[in-house]
Length: 363
Image (cartoon, rainbow, N blue to C red; front, side, top):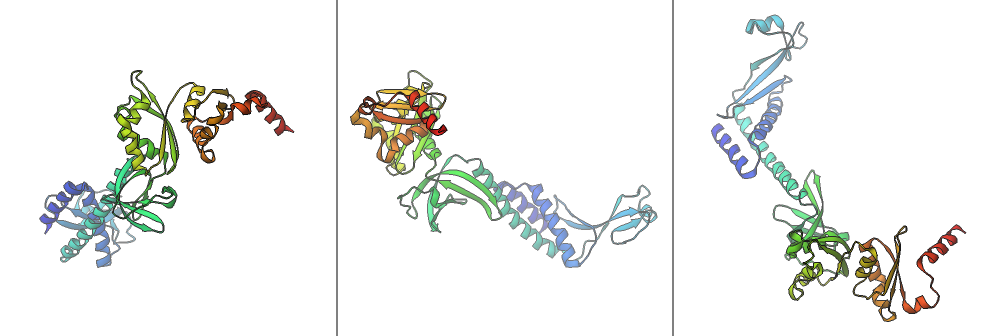
């Protein structure tokens, strides 16, 4: 049995990645508890597990003292030196105490430890694997719904797609494959808890990185993303190579690249805009598909006034202000949109307006 146990531990090391020495240490610690439990001893004991033969021995350990108060834990210097004249005070003397029937208890204990360590090791491996994938996309299979949360099977473990991370109106069909973005991996007593999202802006960014080779290769860079999941998103891109069109790369031949992402996000509209270090140009691009006549900025306050043709005003603002809101998130600027006719009917320039607002606040 002992040689079979050694072989089993080596097999586990290969198959499960559990270090052989770690298993041996765990078995030794468990055998100490098993010995004390079954033989009712309060002695200080050590269990030695021979890594070559699997033989198990139990040793009681006594500290060498001048005066013995507890013979179960202590031994006098004179008595110790009868065993070995080299002993000194505070040294430890060991006596073999292996019971005759300890083999059966040891086998049961070793089995329990191995099973427990396998579970713990698998949990640790899963945790290590997925904690390194925070901020990444993982494909899984929709398993079931619990308390309005979707449980997704990743093969080795499950992930939780909470209600807050679900796209409003999206249907989650049991057995369907789904891509999700890992936002957090927590270590719990029941194993790793993986929290995923379908609404996180990072999902959109990673989908483009997977779909567009130029982004994966570092030629095209995603500068910023703003998203209202399930409805509309904007993504700003920049090319490090003047000969590569960043927007065209993301759109792809006949629009196939962006359409694949739109399909994955169940019809979410995506505006791909060209990033610029010039904030006036970037803000104008961010308001796409609306056409912009002019952009005036107040850099100290990060406020911009944008003028658009009258017929483009509703498009620039968007339904319930969505286009303007997404553009503001994308650029990091507060954007005030005016039409030409509004400007002509007495709207002053941006700095005068801002001064007026400040005066009102002071009053």
